[in-house]
Length: 365
Image: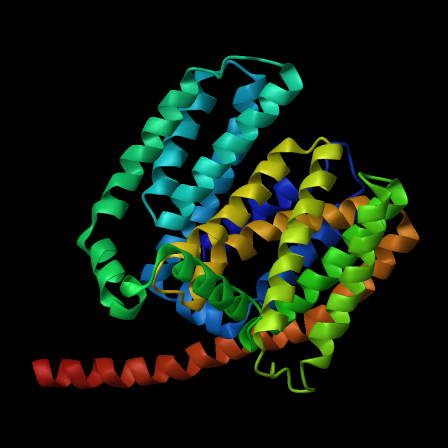
């Protein structure tokens, strides 16, 4: 109950542009983020969001990571010690949750400080960053040295016997498969449409190289068609051959490049660092032996704010805003059924839990 509104609030804050926007625009972005939450596949929610232990490793850290990112930005513009203390504490809390979030924190720090050096030409990195790194290390030590971490690495004998290159290539295939799984089809549809909207925007605004932007626009259209024709009317994704998987993989890299260029030219360095952190949270999985669906949660949740920002930039007139709102309503229908199925499942489980509780109490007496 607490996690959802908190993560939603900070995601919506990250999605806002630095200039003042109309209330209508902000409201639609907030609604869109709610729809994005509903778009996440039920299987991913079941294995991550609503699994009590997993939610503390994957969902709750989104809140602490967002707090870290927002106060890190404040600390770059202010000398207040409180901001820096909050950064160190949030870095520790986030790193203490799970390995992917450790990579996300480190990725954010490296990217954001690189931006500071590029923009200000500063040769020295603020010494208080060492305190943030220290907090991250202290939080990460129990995660990387726990018996569970070693057990996971040794549990898959076949994986352990492979060379590093074989592990990376095999895991790239598996990551792409679970990302484009039928259990994530609504989010993927939105993901591809947002990539296309970004393509039109950067082409119109002449961001970056025009030839690369034209190529990206064409490829984005083809990707939407490819994903649509490989999905039947019930949303069941057919078995992918290896070439389709590599096409999706290359496209994700292409989109990541375009998003980074877009955010850099827009001078949205905080959002750029967040997106890099999100990408690295998935990229680091290329050497791990287990890839359950919930490993996608950090990337998915952090992408909400970036998608919201793309809407703000691309739909900057009232007519465009209402067009986008119509599209959001179209997605909201399926998102509603996703959320409804979760509610119905909990409703049915409640009766079972009540029955089990009754029998346990009777046996105890």
